[in-house]
Image (cartoon, rainbow, N blue to C red; front, side, top):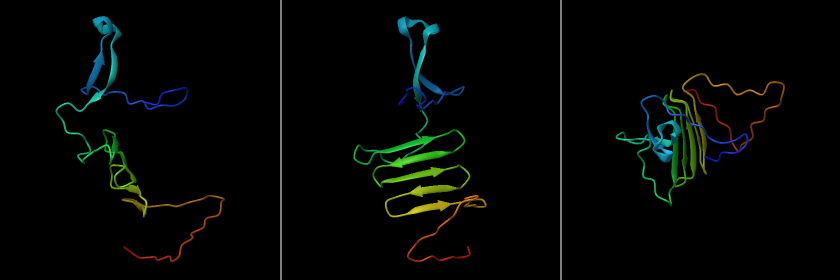
Length: 121
């Protein structure tokens, strides 16, 4: 997808993955893998996907996931261990399942807002 010099998306199939193969002149030695298929398994994103509410999910085998949701106009990143970043039109939320560090070594850091509240969880 979007391949060109120095760019593009490469997702190599793993053993036991179901793939769609093109066989030029029916010669298996020249086989070209066109892409992976879910086969009998359900897709990792079971949400409704209509042209108006386009939703695209990229998920790795170990649970890392990126979701682009056109319906809610959000982007979410999940690491598969409970930490997420959700970006939407009304809110940006960072949820960390581990220690969280914000740093700018040798640089200034500003926090600017109408109000700033600190709560112990």
